[in-house]
Length: 271
Image 1 (cartoon, rainbow, N blue to C red):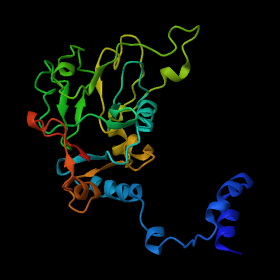
Image 2 (image 1 turned 60 degrees about the vertical axis):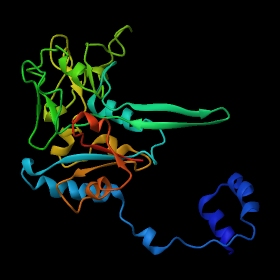
Image 3 (image 1 turned 180 degrees about the vertical axis):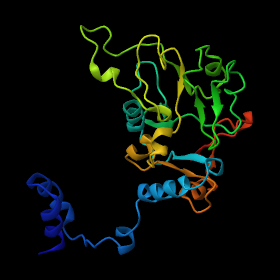
Image 4 (image 1 turned 180 degrees about the horizontal axis):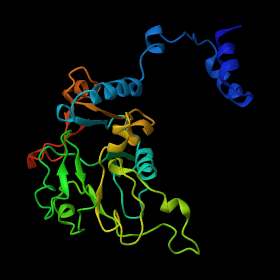
Protein backbone atom coordinates (compact mmCIF):
# COMPACT_ATOMS: atom_id res chain seq x y z
CA UNK A 1 0.00 0.00 0.00
CA UNK A 2 1.37 3.46 -0.92
CA UNK A 3 2.01 6.16 1.62
CA UNK A 4 -0.91 8.16 0.22
CA UNK A 5 -3.30 5.22 0.47
CA UNK A 6 -2.16 4.43 4.01
CA UNK A 7 -2.85 7.98 5.17
CA UNK A 8 -6.26 8.09 3.54
CA UNK A 9 -7.23 4.68 4.86
CA UNK A 10 -6.33 5.72 8.39
CA UNK A 11 -7.86 9.16 8.62
CA UNK A 12 -10.33 9.82 5.86
CA UNK A 13 -13.86 9.38 4.74
CA UNK A 14 -14.64 8.92 1.04
CA UNK A 15 -15.30 12.64 0.72
CA UNK A 16 -12.01 13.51 2.37
CA UNK A 17 -10.19 11.03 0.16
CA UNK A 18 -11.72 12.52 -2.95
CA UNK A 19 -10.63 16.00 -1.96
CA UNK A 20 -7.16 15.27 -0.65
CA UNK A 21 -5.90 12.33 -2.68
CA UNK A 22 -5.11 14.39 -5.82
CA UNK A 23 -3.14 16.85 -3.71
CA UNK A 24 -1.04 14.01 -2.28
CA UNK A 25 -0.02 12.70 -5.67
CA UNK A 26 3.76 12.48 -5.69
CA UNK A 27 4.13 13.75 -2.13
CA UNK A 28 6.46 11.74 0.10
CA UNK A 29 4.92 11.21 3.51
CA UNK A 30 7.14 10.29 6.43
CA UNK A 31 6.39 9.41 10.03
CA UNK A 32 6.68 12.07 12.70
CA UNK A 33 10.03 12.11 14.50
CA UNK A 34 10.09 9.81 17.51
CA UNK A 35 10.95 12.78 19.72
CA UNK A 36 7.64 14.47 18.79
CA UNK A 37 5.63 11.35 19.57
CA UNK A 38 7.17 10.91 23.01
CA UNK A 39 7.17 14.60 24.01
CA UNK A 40 5.36 15.12 27.29
CA UNK A 41 2.17 17.17 27.08
CA UNK A 42 2.35 20.49 28.90
CA UNK A 43 -0.69 19.60 31.03
CA UNK A 44 0.97 16.42 32.24
CA UNK A 45 4.12 18.31 33.17
CA UNK A 46 2.24 21.14 34.91
CA UNK A 47 0.10 18.71 36.91
CA UNK A 48 3.22 16.94 38.18
CA UNK A 49 4.79 20.30 39.05
CA UNK A 50 1.60 21.36 40.85
CA UNK A 51 1.63 18.29 43.04
CA UNK A 52 5.30 18.85 43.78
CA UNK A 53 4.57 22.44 44.82
CA UNK A 54 1.74 21.35 47.13
CA UNK A 55 4.25 19.37 49.16
CA UNK A 56 5.84 22.66 50.23
CA UNK A 57 4.43 25.10 52.81
CA UNK A 58 2.07 27.64 51.22
CA UNK A 59 4.46 30.49 51.99
CA UNK A 60 7.12 28.85 49.81
CA UNK A 61 4.90 28.72 46.72
CA UNK A 62 4.40 31.53 44.24
CA UNK A 63 1.59 30.75 41.82
CA UNK A 64 1.90 32.46 38.44
CA UNK A 65 0.19 32.20 35.09
CA UNK A 66 1.80 32.56 31.67
CA UNK A 67 -0.36 33.24 28.60
CA UNK A 68 1.12 32.84 25.12
CA UNK A 69 -0.68 35.43 22.99
CA UNK A 70 0.83 33.89 19.85
CA UNK A 71 -1.22 30.77 20.45
CA UNK A 72 -4.49 32.35 21.64
CA UNK A 73 -7.17 32.13 18.93
CA UNK A 74 -9.89 33.98 20.84
CA UNK A 75 -12.14 30.94 21.16
CA UNK A 76 -13.19 32.01 24.73
CA UNK A 77 -13.13 28.38 25.90
CA UNK A 78 -11.31 29.61 29.01
CA UNK A 79 -14.06 32.14 29.73
CA UNK A 80 -16.79 29.52 29.39
CA UNK A 81 -14.86 27.01 31.50
CA UNK A 82 -14.50 29.62 34.22
CA UNK A 83 -18.22 30.40 34.18
CA UNK A 84 -19.06 26.70 34.42
CA UNK A 85 -16.49 25.95 37.12
CA UNK A 86 -17.47 28.86 39.36
CA UNK A 87 -21.21 28.94 38.50
CA UNK A 88 -20.92 32.61 37.56
CA UNK A 89 -24.16 34.63 37.22
CA UNK A 90 -24.92 37.38 34.68
CA UNK A 91 -22.58 40.33 35.00
CA UNK A 92 -19.85 38.38 36.77
CA UNK A 93 -16.86 37.44 34.60
CA UNK A 94 -13.50 36.32 35.93
CA UNK A 95 -11.61 35.74 32.69
CA UNK A 96 -12.80 37.78 29.72
CA UNK A 97 -10.91 37.65 26.44
CA UNK A 98 -10.36 41.18 25.16
CA UNK A 99 -10.46 41.49 21.39
CA UNK A 100 -9.02 44.19 19.15
CA UNK A 101 -9.35 44.54 15.40
CA UNK A 102 -6.16 45.80 13.80
CA UNK A 103 -5.29 46.86 10.29
CA UNK A 104 -7.28 48.43 7.50
CA UNK A 105 -9.62 46.57 5.17
CA UNK A 106 -8.88 44.30 3.40
CA UNK A 107 -5.77 43.65 5.52
CA UNK A 108 -7.51 43.14 8.84
CA UNK A 109 -6.75 40.75 11.69
CA UNK A 110 -7.67 40.26 15.33
CA UNK A 111 -5.66 40.40 18.55
CA UNK A 112 -6.81 38.53 21.64
CA UNK A 113 -5.89 39.12 25.28
CA UNK A 114 -7.23 36.83 28.02
CA UNK A 115 -7.37 38.88 31.22
CA UNK A 116 -7.74 37.04 34.52
CA UNK A 117 -6.99 38.64 37.86
CA UNK A 118 -3.30 39.56 37.90
CA UNK A 119 -2.87 38.31 41.51
CA UNK A 120 -0.56 41.27 42.12
CA UNK A 121 2.29 41.06 44.59
CA UNK A 122 1.41 44.67 45.48
CA UNK A 123 -2.39 44.56 45.04
CA UNK A 124 -4.04 48.00 45.15
CA UNK A 125 -7.37 46.34 45.98
CA UNK A 126 -6.18 45.17 49.41
CA UNK A 127 -5.46 48.42 51.29
CA UNK A 128 -8.69 50.13 50.16
CA UNK A 129 -10.98 47.48 51.66
CA UNK A 130 -12.47 49.03 54.84
CA UNK A 131 -13.14 45.64 56.46
CA UNK A 132 -10.03 43.73 55.27
CA UNK A 133 -12.21 41.31 53.32
CA UNK A 134 -9.70 41.36 50.46
CA UNK A 135 -6.36 39.94 51.44
CA UNK A 136 -3.28 38.25 50.03
CA UNK A 137 -2.81 34.60 50.93
CA UNK A 138 0.60 33.14 51.86
CA UNK A 139 0.83 31.55 48.39
CA UNK A 140 0.30 34.95 46.74
CA UNK A 141 -3.31 34.54 45.61
CA UNK A 142 -5.42 37.63 46.27
CA UNK A 143 -8.63 36.36 47.86
CA UNK A 144 -11.97 37.71 49.09
CA UNK A 145 -13.61 36.69 52.35
CA UNK A 146 -17.25 36.66 51.26
CA UNK A 147 -18.47 36.57 54.86
CA UNK A 148 -16.66 39.82 55.61
CA UNK A 149 -17.24 41.68 52.32
CA UNK A 150 -19.83 44.47 52.66
CA UNK A 151 -20.13 45.16 48.94
CA UNK A 152 -18.77 48.72 49.06
CA UNK A 153 -16.97 48.11 45.75
CA UNK A 154 -13.93 50.21 46.63
CA UNK A 155 -11.75 47.34 45.42
CA UNK A 156 -13.48 47.34 42.03
CA UNK A 157 -12.58 50.99 41.60
CA UNK A 158 -9.02 50.48 42.84
CA UNK A 159 -8.16 47.63 40.45
CA UNK A 160 -6.30 49.05 37.42
CA UNK A 161 -7.07 45.90 35.40
CA UNK A 162 -10.87 45.92 35.80
CA UNK A 163 -10.51 42.37 37.09
CA UNK A 164 -13.30 42.61 39.67
CA UNK A 165 -17.04 42.53 39.24
CA UNK A 166 -20.04 42.76 41.58
CA UNK A 167 -22.60 40.03 42.19
CA UNK A 168 -25.91 41.89 42.06
CA UNK A 169 -28.01 38.77 42.57
CA UNK A 170 -29.11 38.29 38.97
CA UNK A 171 -29.96 34.94 37.38
CA UNK A 172 -30.08 34.00 33.71
CA UNK A 173 -33.57 32.50 34.03
CA UNK A 174 -35.07 34.98 36.51
CA UNK A 175 -37.48 36.37 33.87
CA UNK A 176 -38.78 32.95 32.92
CA UNK A 177 -41.64 31.00 34.55
CA UNK A 178 -39.19 28.99 36.64
CA UNK A 179 -35.69 29.57 37.95
CA UNK A 180 -33.65 26.69 36.58
CA UNK A 181 -32.11 24.42 39.18
CA UNK A 182 -28.63 24.60 37.67
CA UNK A 183 -28.50 28.28 38.65
CA UNK A 184 -28.82 27.42 42.32
CA UNK A 185 -26.09 24.79 42.39
CA UNK A 186 -23.29 25.63 44.82
CA UNK A 187 -19.87 26.76 43.70
CA UNK A 188 -16.80 25.84 45.70
CA UNK A 189 -14.65 28.95 45.61
CA UNK A 190 -11.97 29.01 48.30
CA UNK A 191 -12.84 25.35 49.03
CA UNK A 192 -16.19 26.27 50.61
CA UNK A 193 -19.72 25.62 49.38
CA UNK A 194 -21.58 28.78 48.31
CA UNK A 195 -25.25 28.67 47.28
CA UNK A 196 -26.49 31.90 45.72
CA UNK A 197 -29.69 32.98 47.47
CA UNK A 198 -31.11 36.39 48.29
CA UNK A 199 -29.33 38.01 51.20
CA UNK A 200 -26.52 35.45 51.33
CA UNK A 201 -22.95 35.60 50.05
CA UNK A 202 -21.64 35.76 47.41
CA UNK A 203 -24.65 37.87 46.36
CA UNK A 204 -23.81 41.45 47.28
CA UNK A 205 -20.07 40.79 47.21
CA UNK A 206 -17.21 41.76 44.96
CA UNK A 207 -15.97 38.72 43.03
CA UNK A 208 -12.86 37.86 41.07
CA UNK A 209 -10.62 35.15 39.67
CA UNK A 210 -8.68 33.29 42.35
CA UNK A 211 -6.70 30.93 40.09
CA UNK A 212 -9.34 28.27 40.93
CA UNK A 213 -7.91 27.99 44.45
CA UNK A 214 -10.34 25.17 45.27
CA UNK A 215 -8.96 23.13 42.38
CA UNK A 216 -5.38 23.82 43.44
CA UNK A 217 -6.18 22.50 46.91
CA UNK A 218 -7.34 19.27 45.25
CA UNK A 219 -4.21 18.99 43.11
CA UNK A 220 -5.88 20.15 39.88
CA UNK A 221 -4.88 22.94 37.51
CA UNK A 222 -7.20 25.95 37.00
CA UNK A 223 -10.13 25.28 34.68
CA UNK A 224 -8.95 27.84 32.13
CA UNK A 225 -5.61 26.07 31.82
CA UNK A 226 -7.00 22.59 31.19
CA UNK A 227 -9.63 23.87 28.74
CA UNK A 228 -7.38 25.95 26.47
CA UNK A 229 -7.51 24.28 23.05
CA UNK A 230 -4.21 25.78 21.94
CA UNK A 231 -2.18 25.13 25.10
CA UNK A 232 -1.79 28.89 25.36
CA UNK A 233 -2.20 29.14 29.15
CA UNK A 234 0.37 27.80 31.61
CA UNK A 235 0.31 27.68 35.39
CA UNK A 236 2.67 26.71 38.17
CA UNK A 237 5.00 27.63 40.98
CA UNK A 238 7.50 30.33 40.03
CA UNK A 239 9.55 29.45 43.10
CA UNK A 240 10.36 26.12 41.44
CA UNK A 241 13.27 26.87 39.08
CA UNK A 242 12.55 23.68 37.14
CA UNK A 243 8.89 24.50 36.48
CA UNK A 244 7.53 25.30 33.05
CA UNK A 245 6.28 28.72 34.15
CA UNK A 246 9.73 29.64 35.49
CA UNK A 247 11.18 28.75 32.12
CA UNK A 248 8.57 30.66 30.12
CA UNK A 249 8.43 33.76 32.31
CA UNK A 250 12.16 34.27 31.75
CA UNK A 251 11.65 34.53 27.97
CA UNK A 252 12.90 37.75 26.34
CA UNK A 253 9.49 38.26 24.69
CA UNK A 254 7.68 38.34 28.05
CA UNK A 255 5.58 41.28 29.19
CA UNK A 256 3.21 42.15 32.04
CA UNK A 257 0.31 44.60 31.97
CA UNK A 258 0.77 48.06 33.48
CA UNK A 259 4.08 47.26 35.13
CA UNK A 260 4.69 50.98 35.51
CA UNK A 261 2.05 51.07 38.27
CA UNK A 262 4.21 48.97 40.56
CA UNK A 263 1.56 46.31 41.14
CA UNK A 264 3.94 43.43 40.29
CA UNK A 265 1.33 41.29 38.49
CA UNK A 266 1.84 37.52 38.48
CA UNK A 267 0.29 36.97 35.05
CA UNK A 268 2.89 37.01 32.28
CA UNK A 269 2.27 37.31 28.55
CA UNK A 270 4.40 35.97 25.73
CA UNK A 271 4.19 38.19 22.65
